[in-house]
Image 1 (cartoon, rainbow over the protein chains, first blue to last red):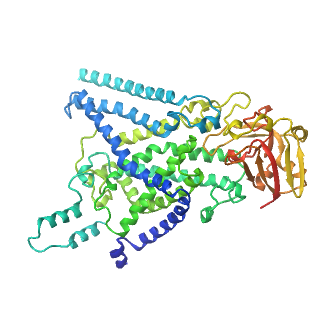
Image 2 (spheres, rainbow over the protein chains, first blue to last red):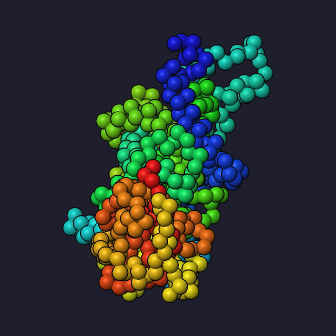
Image 3 (cartoon, each protein chain N blue to C red):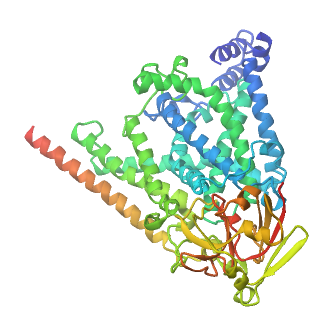
Length: 163
Length: 448
């Protein structure tokens, strides 16, 4: 047991689990790679690398950029009572609808950017309604968020007056 | 693991007194990683990362992805790939077909349900998957990158987990939008990719489930108090230098839930059908055609290469079996006993229709026409040119079901050309592409 731990770095049970899992992964992996080896590897490994090194840092930077802008718009009152709250509120009332709109785009971008030739000829459904529909959904999300934000703002300022 | 790290640190080669500062620098680099950047815990400043956040998202994925995987495997079984080579898009599956069984015909909405859940739930889980990956990103950069053989294998299994999940989600999402840009056959990539993912998933669940349960028990506050130390298992997730919060943990989960809800709202109508279909404003089959065939088609006649002259007065159906052959015109078929069946169409792409009223000749009656009585399988061949489902095999339980028809009419009118005129197969609970359209030949054989 201690020998396994010293040379392997975990318990024998862990080793057994890994052996079983990699037997399955190998068995399926060989078949996955039986066609276009390079293409599949690029897609498979590329998906993970692209997500971790491009996509995630990308949306983090966009979010950080927006937080900076929101801070500027609300007078940079970090943590200073009302101003800090206003900054957080502005941040999130744009952040939430933006994230939801982005998720809808991420899932349905092939249709939104214009359905494929296969889609048009197989389904027999005419036209390209998806971009317009997506924009309408986005507009609805931002409008709903703005409405909720306005109600909250009105309530908060009436509280301030009564206090 | 921490013990192990300590030991490595202690046993790191210790130079003689007054060793060069260059050696010290190298040693520090090996121990702590680059002085700046994502390998340093202080690089990660989100105040809402932590074992509880990750565990809530993990628990949702544990249940959700298991359901998506099971319904996916059921969909493979629904094609009856072990019946005949024409049904099998992954003929070298070997042991991975261990669980296959004769797909039932009851309840008739079975494939509607399993495949609707597979596609819709998969889409709904996209925000949860992305949030989960966001919540654990500091671990991707953890230093040292490899601590032991066990750790190296675990990281490799994580590549199968994360790469596999993204790969399978990407191929699935592209396929339902008929955007065939992936490197190979969808069936091959999605099926074997899923098994690679499941290997990584099994390791991850087995090694992390105790951590998840503990973190969920401790709750968001418990995770905070444990300060990211090893006891809570949250090492590396909690920021040692958190930035001021702009969103609470609950707020993050709420935003993820809202994303899932929005995706559900613009998608699920295509699987419910009827008047709710039009609510699926972004889904590929949120619309249908017009007329008595007012339900979506998977493939138009034009795309399948079936023209008016293929299906005009000269069209004949060939029925073979038991060494005999019968050739019938559409009038001959209409003269045979007609039966009705209310059955849905359900596509592997996740969309489906409510029950449509089909009428036509029972498959079992057509088998009897060439003297094949009792349980028998059939291979159905279409007139269509090219495409991946020009023929399909049906099992004896499907042929023998009294609701299985060679349909000539739907909803009180002759089939439209796009719905398979002059004759198409309709079988309860069978995947849509096995309900062959523009049928040209039926070959009945012995029950396999």
